Image (cartoon, rainbow, N blue to C red; front, side, top):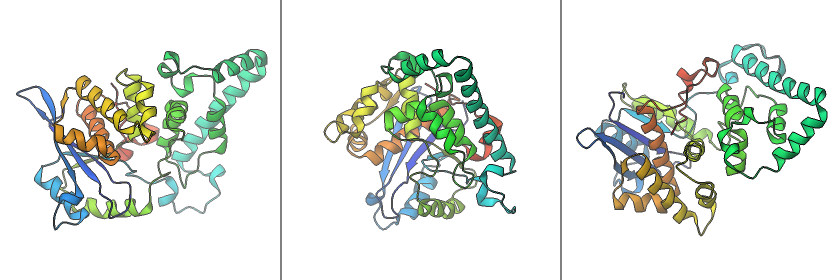
Length: 315
C-alpha cells in the first residue's frame, strides 16, 4: 500500500455557489479498518467562501490525495499551434493513434460482416435481445460483436477539440454498459462547464505542492462495483427514481461499507443518502481508496495516464 493513509473525494460539478461536499476516508492501522472521517459541506463553513473552504480542508486534514469528478487535462487541440488540416487529417500523435485504432475496429467489423453475413446477422439479432444477464457484464464493449450504438459512436469520429484519447479507451471497454445503465455515453467534457475548469485551475495553484490530484468518474466506479458483484443492476437503476433514489443510495452505501471494510457514522450516512452530491463525493473517495490499495485498472501509454490521472477501480 502507498504510504498515504487518507484520500478525499470531491464532486464540484455545479455553480460557484453550489453546496458541494468534501469526503475524507482514512485508514487506521490499529483496527485494520477504513473510516469515513469527515463529510463536509460548504454551507457549514461560516465566514468562508467555497474556494477558501477547500484550501482549509486540504491543509487542516493534511490531505495526501484528492479525487475530483472533472478532467485534469485538455484535448489535443487546446495546446496545438499547427496550421490545422482538420480533424480527419490531424498529424498529432495522440490523435493519429486513436484514429488508427477506431479504423481498425470498424474494418474488422466490416470484414466479419462481409465474410459471414448470415452468421453476422444472427449474432447481431442475438445481441439485440440480451437479457442483461451475467455474460453482458463479464464482457467489455470490444469483446461483444460490435453493437449498433457503439458502431455509431465510432463512426461519428474522434474530435481532437473535444475528446481526449482516454475517452476512446473508455468507449472501448465500457460503452455498452454505460449506455445501458445511464442512457448516456462517456464524454470527458459532456457535462463539465468551463467555469469549473477555470476555477480549479486557479485553486490548484494554492494547494500544497505535495498533493496528488486524480480524476474519477462516479458512473465508471458504479459499473465496476456491479461487475465486482458488490451491487445489483437495480441498485443503480433505482438511483434516478424520485421515490426510490434515497433507498437505492442507502443500499449501495451499506453494500460498499460491508464489502470494502469502510465504517461510516450515522450522521454521515444520513447526509450521503439524502444528498446526491454528497453521494458522488463518497464514491469518488471510494475510487481513491482502491488506488491506495493498488486496485485500479492500468491504462495504455497512448492514453497518457501520467497526465490524465484517471482512476478506474477494480473490486
